[in-house]
Amino acid sequence: MIPRYSRPDMAGIWEPENRFKIWLEVETLACEKMADLGIIPKSVPVNLREKGGFDVARIDEIELEVKHDVIAFLTSVAEHVGEDSRYVHQGMTSSDLIDTSFAYQLKQAADILIADLDGILDALKKRIEEHRNTLCIGRSHGIHAEPTTFGLKLAGHYCAFKRAKQRLETAQKDISVCAMSGAVGTYATLDPEIEAYVAEKLGLQHEMVSTQVIPRDRHAMFFATLGVIASSIENFAVEIRHLQRSEVREAEEFFSKGQKGSSAMPHKRNPILSENLTGLARIVRSAVIPAMENVALWHERDISHSSVERMIAPDATVTLDFALHRLKGLIENLLVYPDTMQANLEKLGGLVFSQRTMLALTQNGVSREDAYVIIQRNAMKVWECNAKTTLKEFLSQDEDVTNALSDEAFEAIFDYNHYTKNIDDIIDRAIA
Image 1 (cartoon, one colour):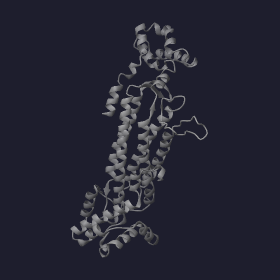
Image 2 (cartoon, helix red, strand yellow):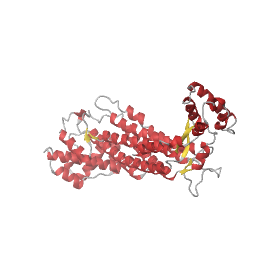
Image 3 (cartoon, one colour):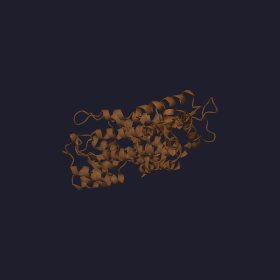
Image 4 (cartoon, helix red, strand yellow):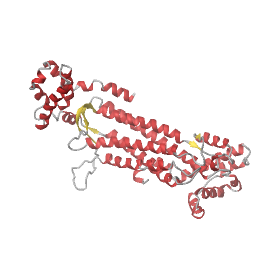
């Protein structure tokens, strides 16, 4: 987590000040219910609300001696609260505090990421409508295939991010759990009502069986979801990087006045945002395997997961938040060149009509095998002459074609409208 790729709201979730603030709230809520149940004096939660506080530098100082962050935190709180502090954390384990607070932080992070995804969807929707009917070539294996529209291309990405939002909402719900069940999760020292109260106040659900920690399959799914979202970002970024290549140049990242593309070559306009997004996606995905390896803990608890989560949670969420924000700007400001798209579409001399012609022949009595051979031999001529002669011209001189097709049927093949007749319905379905 470095400032260059961080935004304040997300980074703030992982600052020590916010973490200890959540810790104090969890402890206070637990004390409120304990007091309500008559377990501790009613003055304890009152004093925590009125005098409860901590000092981050002091916590760090204490931890240097005691080598335990929760004890250091509780000691700092005790210095603010006084005598009633002896009732704070009563019957709780460190995991009760840390896991519940960590779940709340992940919930906070997910709120920001869901809002980011809403921004992506809004930006894509506007560009889809703008280019709903902008004709361009579709490619398979990087080679010209058949016509599509740029709006339909974008609609595919729209659906990916819509799925991403749905998955993240599910993952957020799954990770938003409170576990306050004491050592090895038996509630021997904590009444289950305390957990239920804290969970309700924090907007969390209670863990069904927590051993001494919240099961890490929940966290694994959360980080896996972030990894899939990162891959969808990269998928879009790679598309733009290809479309911006000089030989293609159908779309291009916005290049602002005064921007410089190269220290050596003044003419350069590079897809730096898309390349950056590709790199950031790798960082987010790198959190997935460690999160999955955290699932296997010893018996009721160990802390092999702890150091991992202290690193991957800030890094993955902060990086993904930054990447989604950057992607939104890229989409909103993307330069699109319909004329170049049309020129590229026609670049290979009508080879895009090969399937249409083959199907026309099969519908007029020619076997599919023979039709394929007829079209392929003419298509190869187009490749060999570098499209100086079109597929239509070669086919018009082929007796196997002219004998099978009437002039009217032949001419009907070469109509781009055939490829776009269902696109409005597909886009409407996608963005509904």
